[in-house]
Image (cartoon, rainbow, N blue to C red; front, side, top):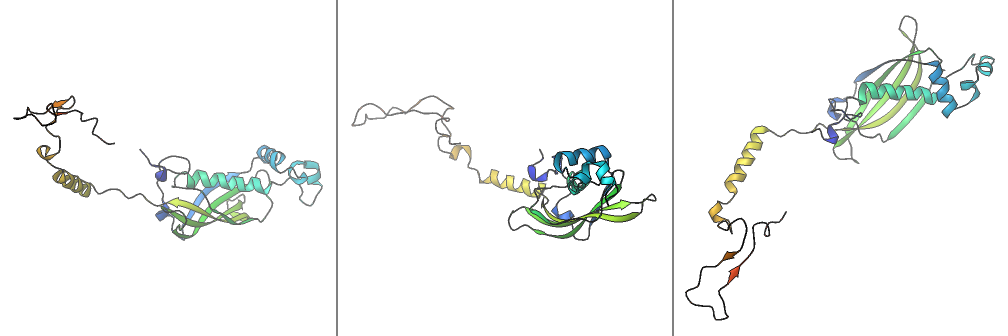
Length: 228
């Protein structure tokens, strides 16, 4: 069974851990295309400013047409981050972000290349078993030749990732088990080892009756004397 700290951000077995996210690493998060209907639907639900939802007003403005809500754009980044990194990595929660900048308007039909760069990594002082990774995420608009034209989003944030689980050495585990067997007392040496599994046990008749009455009887069972 996969333990929680060995699962990815989407619940599948993780293949990347804190130790793999070294400073200098760049992870390609793919290319996303901005869907016009989704862009406007998001704005109507969460950010209904006129330059996001009213095509006529937006066309007559300096924007020259509808532009995406910045929060829609960062949601596209988040989805790419989950699909291409967190789905593979032993990701925990994030302690927060330091920067979120919208550097240029995003429009329907734009193709945005997404990537994340690891800027720093250190063991977490607040969460034992986790490491804190500092990351920079970027989105760049691509031109017709698939070359980056303009950076449209930049964000700096931190993520918690589980350290790689330590697997037990089979030889060492076998040696520990052997030591435990050797240290266990033999059946003849354990108290009550000669008792039947259950039922009362009558003492051997004494050669002389005790001064206080009938011969002693000991009752009980193995279950009665076992402590979980």
